Length: 439
Ligand code: PXG
Ligand code: PLP
Image (cartoon, rainbow, N blue to C red; front, top):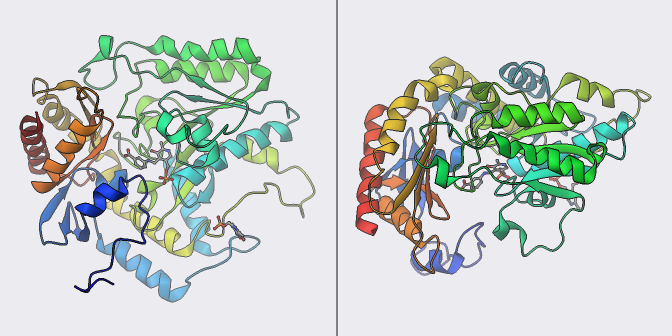
């Protein structure tokens, strides 16, 4: 403790943060409700990013808060290996019912990163179980973000997240990313050009032979890299090529899951069904850490072949299907259903799109991208100091009562799905002013 009774900032090594810069001028939230945060100096801040793409029903929703409190009283923890508790089965069933048809088996994890590791391991083990043990290669995509564990950064394509960590997983290759500012800048919704980039998979099949490839993993909408939309036809083409070559297609829906694009999952929004879906974040409204992998029935069934007393999949976490997370998840799904939140982004999409695209023409705005309740406003980088212009916009917004997120020189918006039109107006106003001031 320091002398003024506030905790010292020293010991906490902050994730994905410029620690020294932050600790010189810290920003702290102490309370949240609905669409808002409150800072430690008593200011109200509108949440333009659902915390970190996760608080889809808004903050401190009573039903969810009560469910967590009651669960902590009743059953605080139950071991998930060779034991279980009723809410784990109930939540799995509810999640499967929301998932695209056919993806009806659910494996629980504690984060998006763990969901990714789980899905990659499932894919490789599945091929082995069906007698194609040579299918071990994993294909990701440039600029992809799949969390921070070794599998995820190997298939991921963000250089900063990879370069300091050695050779990573072997047997991994990458498709090109789909961003094409020259042809697609300021597209409303899905851009027109770029479906042919999916044919990169054909090239990788020719190079490695398809019989060595286990799975392709992509984000239907790439979030962390700066909010990139899939070109029209791209995901379907990838689906067709995976089917043709017997390769599993994994959609990483950690940010797109649970209503962000206007349907429960982006696969439904885009009408393309993968073989596995990874999710996290919105599953529990961000209240308790939890992730999930949704899997096709026959993939699961392929594991269920040996003697019944043997463990079929040597994988799991101490906190898989944690009772508090399951209770939070059930109350979250109830809240989404009661308030129609999983399709609310579709209702607001046009209004939100109009708002974000009104920033075209503001100083340094070189592209605006949107789908559902996701927006990306890309700024021209400052010469020799990439990222600083968007970060200054973030600071200006924060000082003026709005939380946004920046990645590189893109400002990302992903507000809680309870957002009202008046909040959207406030987001665009505050952000527009910040962009003009920072210019
Ligand atoms: N996959 C995807 C597609 C994600 O967006 C993860 C995996 C990892 O999830 P966890 O729960 O392990 O963090 C994510 C996480 C940003 C931002 O600024 C996005 C994420 C995390 C932190 C920041 O856009 N997404
Ligand atoms: N490290 C050690 C020494 C452990 O015993 C365990 C779990 O038992 C782990 C790591 C993995 O922890 P978790 O299951 O929470 O991912």
